[in-house]
Image (spheres, rainbow, N blue to C red):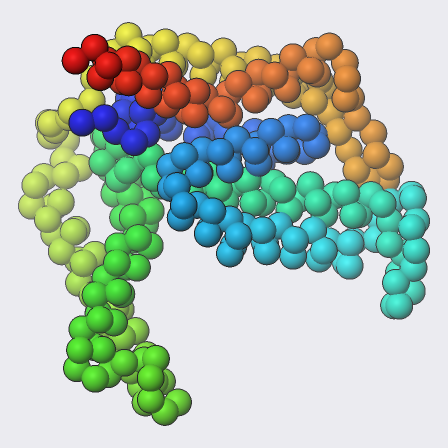
Length: 298
């Protein structure tokens, strides 16, 4: 059966390297073009992974976070040389603080979207496969932490439905009744979380996890396709890192706006950055075309 996301079927090393690069560049590239590239590609990949749920997430969480972050910065940051007006408090409202607030908001939302994509692609078994032998204890803790939120949410729905079946609904009834039902659900979830963590730790310990010389079964093999993807990601990472160190993506907001925008090398860095960020969507599109072509020949 064809996977919804072809990039998820690549080797875990490919997935981890990709997200490591996009995380690092998204957090440190403050060039406006790079910020918009990161946000656009993150939105595209998030929609590709989650479909309609992604649109609801963007409208309910991402857009308000973007607007709120963009508005907060000018209210507290008054640096800059171009003064637009003065606030009722007497502090200046500068053009640089507004643009920096918008840039910081875009960076924050894009990183959140990339992290959401990361949790969908980099499953716990992939993370343990990569770091289980290097840092076994830390990899297990991080794997449990990353998968805790979706498991907690799913278990909370089950507990809430069970409580509602016993007429202990936290939605209907008086305020005191709803409060007691909510506290009961929370107590149940805390107990379940502690028991689940203990059971997982005991299970992994009984299997000899982390012991020296322990072997492990793995379904992942590094194919030629994965090697080509690693070469492409390595090229993009080295090229963009060299561009950043050489000042090809330089941009500052304070005390005045300065930066390179239309230099040939800067444009080439931006093109490579876009190609890097959009890689999973392109790979998925190619896989989908190949799949449809094979289906048409059946």
